[in-house]
Amino acid sequence: ACLTLVERPGNRYGGIGPDTRDFRLVRPHTALYDVGAPTPKNDPEPTRRVCMKVAVLKETRAGERRVALVPQGVKALLKAGLEVTIQTGAGLASSVSDTEYREAGATIAASAPEALRDAGMVLAVHAPPPADVAAMSEGTILVSFLSPLTNPDLVRALAASKITGIAMEMIPRITRAQSMDALSSQATVAGYKAVLIAADHLPKFLPMFTTAAGTIRPAKALILGAGVAGLQ
Image (cartoon, rainbow, N blue to C red; front, side, top):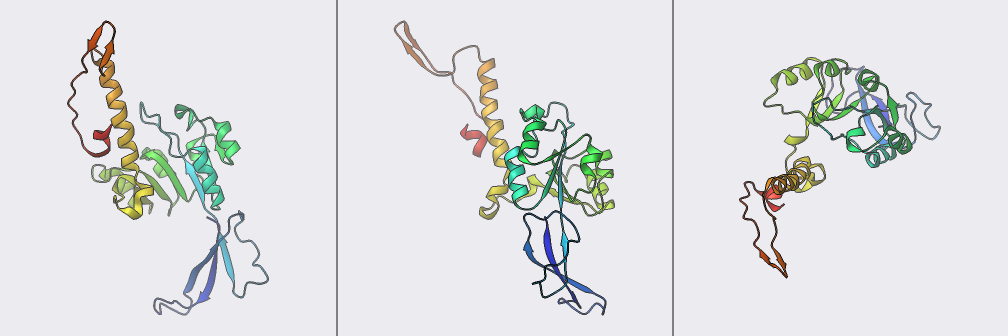
């Protein structure tokens, strides 16, 4: 995001040295996209403005139709002062065209390396392939379903490149984090789709029908699961 940081000599958390600088976040700038813009005359202290670019990658896993960000989300990020770049074709499998992303205010990149160039944050559904991870800059934040406990090679690669990984599936399901709960939303889709697939394979009607010709009894089903998936 485009932020104003106040630079002061010294360090408020301890004396590390006379040349140490303390950068304190003052306020976000929602309409500022240039790094190193002049300090406003009414600012009493030296400031530095920093912007962040968010890159959204096209999924490469076979059969994956989801995309990490939709146009509505692009508008929200732009309003917060972020720049958004979408890899071309990222939303096609989700019925979202590049034109819709452009109309929302995003920039379209022709390839993953182009989208990742100068990106401070990367959004993806699944962990990007090794080539894309290698193309990320040091200090980049990767937000995705990372499966860190079963993907040690990815964890090592992120650590070696000093990339911060945020695994969406590891976010605790607590009240304060409900808006970030990706597991529940995806479980809802999976549970609903599971019933549709089962109904398609069932050699009879699923619900009960009562007609003039008689009554068709409903099918019996055994649902394995709990929570959101079970409710569907």
